[in-house]
Image (cartoon, rainbow, N blue to C red):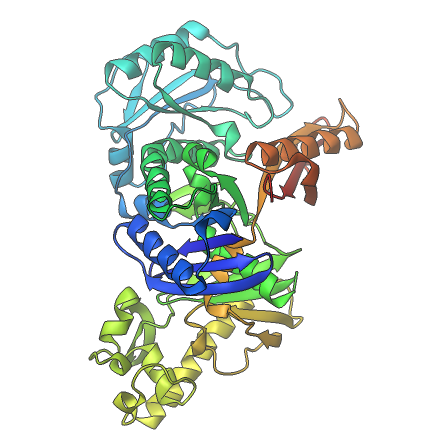
Length: 527
């Protein structure tokens, strides 16, 4: 028995599943205090099913909490960054590409000091070290230099620290040695190593590490809040947090790596769509109250973005689903002259402000009811809407979805399209380029189902020099690293499988260099 919960910008969805069977589900408005919304959703599914909470084996939670913190510039901890790479990388110091307001908040607004610098308020330090792509040292590591930097960070009262090193995914030794030195100077240091989060690409990986460190205090409070909500309902089973690749991590792991939850909402919807439809390869259209997210399923998991992903104005390169969002949802505002659908929305106030619910705002939901496609609320409230306007808006909605689907396709060949989400009543006709449109049972809570059925995952992304070892040896190393990370995140070792392997020969680098990316997934321990 599992409970899956997905916290969205408009609604918090919860579902109770017995194996692969949906026992009960609920959808409640998201609250300002995320934990309160989760507790309300939990009470709903428990009351509806009459289940004994002692029989619940696990609770899986997907949340937008940490993404929203970065976007809204709230609850972020000032963070110092130590980069190992001198004499290289001087031209582009850490946080050089951050928006000014975010850099000022996270950087701590500290004054310049010897051995460090301030880039628009950011406390950043450059030290010797780093490696080439094949593991050769750029310069020798200097422990005393790092210890001096750590003392300066301690003196200004910062304990959130990100450490990055050039090509650390190839050789993370210098980052690990630096972390040991920093902890000897600052015992309560909250340290993120870039090699543990990001991929190849210094600035983006470093950005991800800084972002992770500045979110850790919030992560600790949030996870403790989730635990308090479960304790209140006497649920003693372990709980897990959804990652942005469609897998889970245990609560302690989530406290350490909150950035890995970014975009977990659309990912949960895609995993839920794959489960409900039985399809492994398709395009998923997830229509919510405010936005519509379009993603691509490959082998039952979301297609991973190949390029750097922008989070709150900051470029990062840790694993993220390749999704495209448009401002279209059940609460989207409708303007008639000129005709416009969204992107503004009434969001979670839909049940108060829409015409069919007694409000005075014309929304996309009102149009669908007026067109006879659904009977939500009071249909008489929209009976007098202009028929031409209703037809024009329905056509515009379908055009917006068709354009978004086409943008995500890699060929002109028609592909299956799975429609999920509470706002999917907006899909009223055929989607150009779709071989079929599938709206499975329980589609409104596909995101919560995706959380409930998720497995635990791990990933490896490294560059190997095949001049020094064989291709098979390199693949074995990468697979083992991905499997180990899955086990560390809470997977049962015997259940771990390799689900994706990608090799990219790097012709512009010497030594027969090849980038190998491996994804491993396994069942939860005890599942």
